[in-house]
Length: 220
View 1 (cartoon, rainbow, N blue to C red):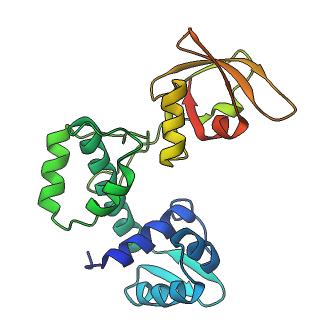
View 2 (tube, rainbow, N blue to C red):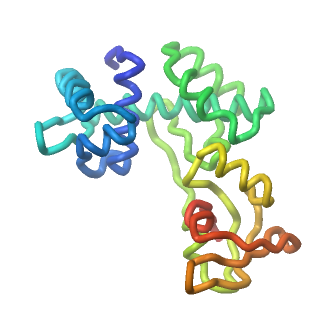
């Protein structure tokens, strides 16, 4: 696997996520917005990645991640999510505190360290936010899940993941008592604004906004 700079790894990860795990093309502007930089800087980086055969880039037409680029991106994602598990389970960080730290740790190059970390953690399949952790071959299994907003009235579900990992959002979920593994039941749905009333763990009645309901993922 080609040696990549931190910046190259970050761009590959961004292209992978924006493309829906490599399924579609991504515009330069979308990448610029994600990376909070100028489109010209994105074009320069995409040319570099294209020369390394990690993306397929056509000027003015956007970019598609290649198979080798996908493998590289998944290894960075694997490291990121393993470090998040370590920080939460072993160092007792809260789930809203670990993303930025893992953004730094994900660039450590030692495959042996990551192998030992995976062994030490007991080969976890999901990170603290419910996202799947790719194995050493970049393969992973996703849980069947839907947004809480799509659950029918009187329907039930168990919280398995969150789409939004913004610390403020996670802190709010902590405050109102929504966490991974929480059992939910839809008591009422407000057609006007998409908000809903839910029951958590058969005892905690909450009114939540449409935005929260769309960003909390559940399974039956």
